[in-house]
Image (cartoon, rainbow, N blue to C red; front, side):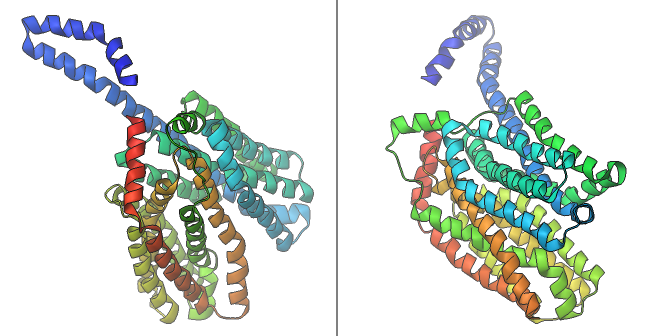
Length: 444
């Protein structure tokens, strides 16, 4: 229906082109090229605008994720509490975010991902603003809970919109840019919050950081962010029977996400103290090694996007990268390395960890039933939340037992488990291909 209406709307242009053909064949060809190229250019512009908007939203989600931890020294002094009480706020954040990911994904598919995303942006911002206006420990816990609820919005809504509006041939790169934007938001959060505290104080920093949320929501509206979920679900329900979202593939991918989180959390959160206490590494060297790991991860995400667009075997890509990664981290775990080599191996491990991120997201997209991308990403993202709850307890216990080598050793174990699970999730490429073909038919 859409193609016929497009042709009918251009009938005057075609008639003009035929008249010009009588006088100039070259002019007719030029007109036809313009007519055919215009919709494609408009589609490309819309896709770029959508990707930019979603990436800005994901940047803000990671910025808000680090806003409270960066203010812990200020909050500890103002509230008169210890780090255990402050850590409880992060636990509340993780629990709320983990428990609400799947319901928010369901909501995104039923009322529209755009609406859910805008609400999340405003909710996270208002939570920080309210804490800045009324600072107390109870307010901190409420703020953490609201931030956790807001955080649960981004993955289901973002991926639903990207899946619906990005070019199939560039989907992996779109996912990689989206992920990179999140990494960037977390990377700049410490510097931005420190600058805000130095200029306008801790309370002012909370208010300004929060005000960015509604401001970005208004920007999304001004940019014309498209929707996904409700309309697509209605169309798909007319063409295909209803499918359960809780499939074996989705369950396996949820475990896969949890193992990914566990394999990286130990290095990210306890790598510095493990290197210092178990390997005699200087504080500056340990921090440089961790910085190399995190920085290379961001670069690896961008490289992984190009790789994901050039293969259908995303599980094999993830398995290969993590198998090499496990070998690298095993060397770090059992050998005391010179600083330069340690930094180089940490950078290599970080790069490979980043490379698999777009392939990881493509696995979820391929496993999601038509019109259920929001729910699929909402469910599997709970794996990250579970790892965020388990990892501090596990790796903290390892350090309390004076086993710093096992911070890296346990990461290797989780990486090997991730490799095996990635191979299992990639055993049915034909099904994934068929799903992609159906999406292409809907897009056409």
